[in-house]
Image (cartoon, rainbow, N blue to C red; front, side, top):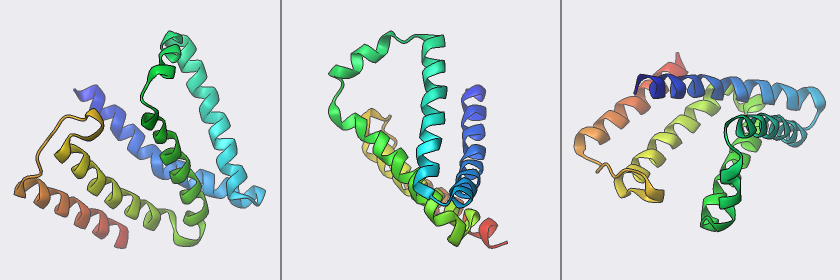
Length: 144
């Protein structure tokens, strides 16, 4: 369990760094869309290396997967394109604030209904209170 928490903490640390770097690249080259394209080429290369180092065989099973599962790629593209366009004008901190609030809402809904095969965790009053406190904490940290 601690390795999972540390892995996700590192991923969380990386999200604002990704936003800042890609927004800067978009400004530098004059095209947020081109910066997103470059990011995806680098990400594809990294994922390809990891896949071949671990086990490339499961890729063949993707043909039989439910097609709606591939929508995840559109969500990633939307996130990267939107943060690359928005962050330079809106600010990385403010943009990430809204991303985090959206994540809290979406995660609570997914968990409550057990969507997409997620473990079902009903939305209790204490969970709603905890999520509200987290959102307020993110808002206060962003205002600071």
